[in-house]
Image 1: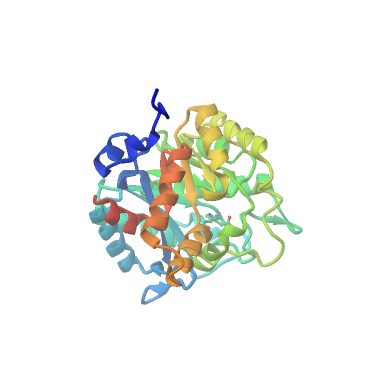
Image 2: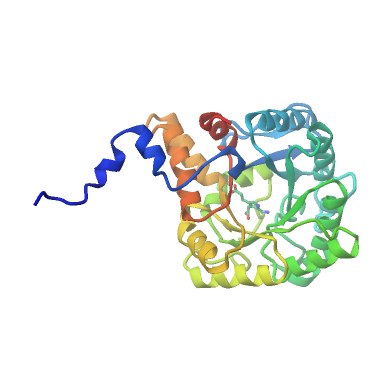
Length: 325
Ligand code: PBG
């Protein structure tokens, strides 16, 4: 008898054999690229903690959208940064708001070629940096929902294919669904940030989107990183409120939650490989401590392997190039 009977290395011998038995696919169509558009700037402003990314003007936004589409990216997630902020975040639902202008510009540039997803929150728009309107020092859930309803319909009217509520208010999906339906946007899907944790990995994003809270934090609405069961309850609740796609965020720190969401719900799952996760890879690569291409593709593959159908990633454009669109 020869030993061992099973030699797993047999299936790893050549690249062609490894290709044949590879379980997880990673292709440009799985990736969603976040983009930032800022009102009132003449030139794109690079984001220092996210090398390769910038706050765009409307013109550079179009150009970037075009380049992403040419690289094979099929979905964009847009964040707007208004020139003026107020306690209500009213620029978020203005017809001439920067996100609405950005959506129209991208649609004009790209037609139906690319799916436009609008991030729906108030933190970039309020002068205090919280995700909703305040009552004292706390975010007032139900008054905030009234604002989210207006943001959703204004984004849909500006051409968003999907709206993506990220504020973690209770009942936000039901409220937005109701508002969209009432205005005739019955076919606009909701991509819900359903399990969004209060994470330190959003640090660089807050520079990018200028939405850091002036005081306090987001722990009264975002999930405690210690809680997986609660994350699943949030996901089920968002699905029952009418979410079409549910998102887990951050991705790399929550692979277990992605796996459970995919197995336990069978729903389309998105995962957000967030700014801090991108910055870690970038910073280490800049120091020569790891190979950026290999590390980024490994991270994205791992998120897909965990069960994500879609991955929002700041590496989208580079990854599409590496993968060969
Ligand atoms: C808030 C929002 C955040 C991110 C996406 N939407 C930040 C936050 O909740 O503080 C983080 C994305 C990232 O870090 O890449 N509307």
